[in-house]
Image (cartoon, rainbow, N blue to C red; front, side, top):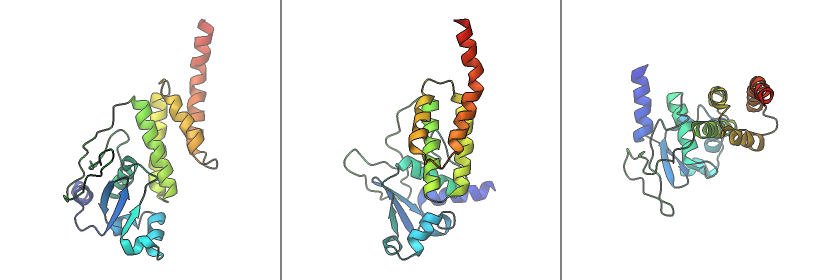
Length: 202
């Protein structure tokens, strides 16, 4: 299994034998149709139903961040993603001029994101992956993002920054999707005795 994982990581890292590209804010991810299409109903439809993407062999995901796309692809190839970093490094463009992706092994990040509080960073990352997985029809990734978000919520629920993640869930997740809201409700319910204890001490 470890050897297969190494092979899959190498395919994503180096883009060898790739037959399509995913473009996102100046970053080009060289990927493989057999891996992407078989796991995403969105990508399968975009390329197999005669849309422009099927002839250009490229799809533009400008609504996502390269970080989120990297996590999606990490899951499709490796069955996991890093919630507070990257499983596969990629080359980021400059502020105005995109850096050409000429090397086959060019997933090297030149601009690492600024360090933020773990609750804020991991919570937001899992949320963005969840939203993207729902959008692109990658159900196993959606399930994994829920699991990671739940663990993160329980671990960092007392963090001052976590309320920002809660606010983002309430404003960004579709109203019919209750999974993350239920997780937050459960965490708040667990915290209620602590709030009562603090009030009694005053």
